[in-house]
Length: 285
Image 1 (spheres, rainbow, N blue to C red):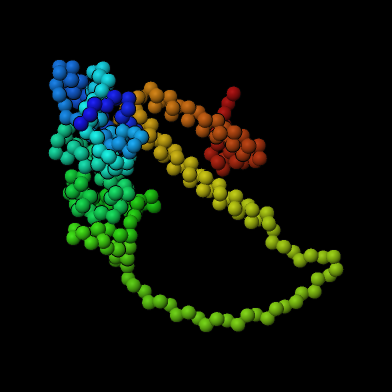
Image 2 (cartoon, rainbow, N blue to C red):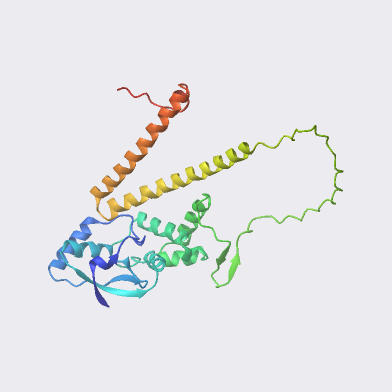
C-alpha cells in the first residue's frame, strides 16, 4: 500500500460501479476522516502512465471535501479495462449497500465488457454478485439490440469453450449448385462514326456513394449524441460538477440549434412547402 496524491488518480475511466454517488455517505465519511478515522485503502490500477480508480469513489470525494491531498491506495498492475472489470465486482458484501440500479449498471457493463464477452451467465453473475437469472434476463434484452456485444464463443461451467452462435438454429442442407451456363455469344453493335455508346451516368454512382456516406455520418452523430448525454450525466450526477455539465451541454445545444436554423432556411428557400414537410416552425421576428 502507498499514499498517492488525489490529483494523480483518474476517476474518468468508466470504473464507477454505482449509478449515483450517495452525498450523505460522502458527508459521513468526510466527518469521520476529520475525526481521525482510518479507512480501508482505495483500489487503483496502474498501467505505467495513469492510476485508474476501481473502488473507493465515496472515499475519494470525502477526502477531497476533508481537504486531504493524499489517500492510501492498494495498487494493482493492470490496464484501464482491468480496472473496469474489477469495479463490476466490488461492493458485493461490504461498503454502502448497492441499489437495484447499481446492480443493473454493473451487469450491463460486464456483459458489454471484453472481459465478459466469453463468460457464461453464471460466471458473470458470480463476479458481479447477482443471480444467474438476472444476468440471463439482461443478456436477452441486450441481444435484441444491434449494439449488444455478442460473442460466438462462451465458457461453460466446466471451463470448456463452446460455440453458441448456432444454438437453436436448425441445420440446413447445402443447396446444390446449378451447372454453369455457357457464355452468351457476343453481339456486335454497329456504332455510327463519331458517336459513342451511352455510358452509365457516373453522377448517379457518385450520388449513391454520397447518400451512403451521409447515412453513416448521421448514425455516427446519433451515437455521439447518446454518448454525450451519458458523459454529461456522469459529470453532473456522479462527479457532482453540475455547473460544468450544464455549461457544456448548453454550448453543445446552441451549436446544434445554429446548424438547424441554417438548414431550415435553406429548405424553406428551396421550396416553401418544405416547412410543412419537415415540420419547420415559423419564427417571428
